[in-house]
Image (cartoon, rainbow, N blue to C red; front, side, top):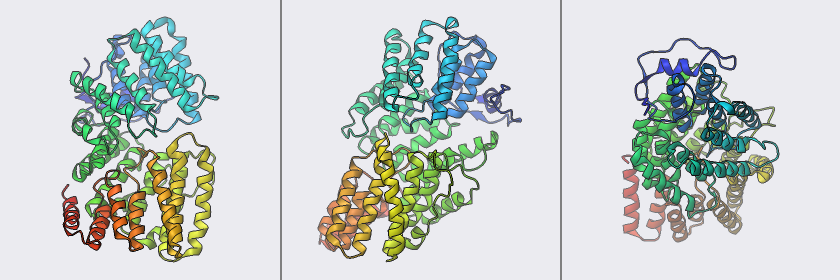
Length: 532
């Protein structure tokens, strides 16, 4: 088995940034920093000279470092042009399971990589040809098939790879990941996740240093109801793939869902440092996707601990970035969410009302993540303006939010389709309340909570800025109905655990209803959050 625990960054960098025309040539790199990627062994018929490089590329693929992995596979193809599986690997880095559907440009590149792999079929084994045809099923019909259809085609083909090669653990891992990626996001029983997670756990016993297995256990249980089953994998993943920013961050997913704020801060700080490190080594500039993603999770954790000064430092850091790539959906959402969270969770309505919109002349290529980023800004601006009785601004912004919500109704992903509509319902409820129409406000917020319950939480976000049930509690408290407000706060707790504002609202509502012991327990929870 090839081990990568002490692979030097110089070796990795030179391998990943080769001399092919499609890859940028970069300068020298530090030779003393080890790259910890985990342990992977993927048999191929390619020359033994590229075996280690191929396994490095697969290890990075399993940690979803898609760009670096693609460059590594390209270098393998350069070193051995007859290696069909190098092109399989390039195609695999353009699929992005569990993430947003790839843009058209990625589909086109993937189709080209598959064609190159097929052209080398004579030099590959039958097993390798099955792998190539599996990813080929995803990219073949790029223009006239939905993402879900193509993803299911890939899953079915990977089942055939496993059936033909029952002892191939990498085939099994990729197949289970495909099944997990195709789980119904509306199924709140998590039937697929409850099937797949234990299978990954069994594989983890056999291969405890494999980065993909730890990663996919986390994704299997990346829900508040299941997260406690992944804490051990999260702890291990921090050690297995120390050099991979996304790997370090993924452990933070589980810690966030469990409300383990100190561990969430630790994991995401490690991820930020790794992202900055790699950005400097590979000359990627500031504000990379991995860095922004982890900074959003850091702000969320700090706010739940009441560490507002530390949260403010993150806001200032994000606001200092120049020339962020706001056409990247993850960067756009996280860059927007950081200042929105800081203003809204602290009830700084003036700051919320004045959050600047994303300025972009050409929105033709915006995906649902970017449109919902803009919707999130409108959401904050409307709530802030409504709370300040600035109804003209609130209503003008609401018109724009309504346009976004309507335009997203044709999107394939449920999160993309529903998120802006949840925002619209929530802000309309607050605007209605501030105008004195109490019954209508409650009805709208309950509708928002019901729709949010049906909508999967995107992995680009540590959590909703304000969960709908928490907002319902706030609204009912404003209507002087503490008993019902308390019920709403308690309904929110299992879905968005260990939130400061939820416990604060619950403590106040319990006090107002004369439930002294319950109020004391929630106040105790508040005092414990800073040390969790």
